[in-house]
Amino acid sequence: MTSTIILVLAVFGATCVEAVEALTLVVASGTTRGWRSALEGAASALVLLVVLVAAIGVPLVHYVPIDVLRVVIGGLLLVLGLGWLRKSILRASGHKALHDEDLIYANTVAELGSGDSAPRKARDAIGFTIAFKGVLLEGTEVLLIVLSLGASSHRLGLAAASAGAAAILVTAVGIIVARQLREVPENTMKLAVGVMLTSFGVFWVGEGSGFHWPGKDLAILVLIALFVAVTYGSIRYLRLILPNPSGSAAPVESVESH
Amino acid sequence: MVSPKQLVVAFGRFWWEFLIGENPDAFVGAVVIIAAALLLRHERDAAIVVVPVLAVVALVGSAYRGRKRGTGKRMAPREATPTEPGPS
Image (cartoon, rainbow over all chains, first blue to last red; front, side):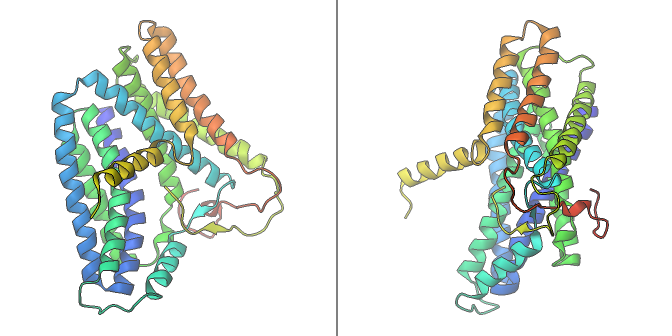
């Protein structure tokens, strides 16, 4: 029960983070190159992602020994979780620029707007490609998290439903707030999801290796508490050792790899 | 037309970027943690301590190595400022 709740929260949170990033590119593409191509590109990528979940996820669950699956998936979750946590810690402590969706939006609009003008209602290859790639690339990370958490706990359907609900929520909110995506506390969400992914990773590596955690699923809560404390301590310490504490306003980065 | 070789290269590049990319520490940390878990699978009492501790070491070490060095500009945490919404 505990692991089910955390699984839903982790998938939901991760999908929210990635969906905000994908939505930025879709909205930028739609407003500059026309909505038809942007929406078709986004929808095509979503269909491809759903096909991939069914094509890879179902065989994973049925044909790969569960312990092997858990070790491999635990490792994958650790790589993802440790990477997200590291980035979030560095951003929260001021050692790395924050991710600014507004700036990414403005840059993408400027880039797309400088090209040939496209008929707003006709199909446009550039608009389609930008939206398709944005959704596919961000969605791939969600896909890996859905497959990892869903397959290792035999709850693939629940994980996929959680991701779908998050994508729908972000899309609905995105339509309402349109260009105010920077209001989303992305780093905090990334940090929370990073803690959950890392905790799940450690838990599954242990279970898959053959030793069982005391308290079974409750051990995940202990691991979460441990990583929250370590993350908090790391942020506090790294803030103290900033090289130039009298510096000025916060520069933000425009585009970066996730 | 995309050749099979290009597809393989693109596939390999995707996984390289995904697993190693700009932060190889996480990949190395995960490999070490898995190795330790497998080695200690018959020593449960040791494993339940060593495996989480290794994950903590990997996280702290990676974050510390990624800190800004020198005297560059400070990048203030946006979410921590009181004028902006969202928890810090």
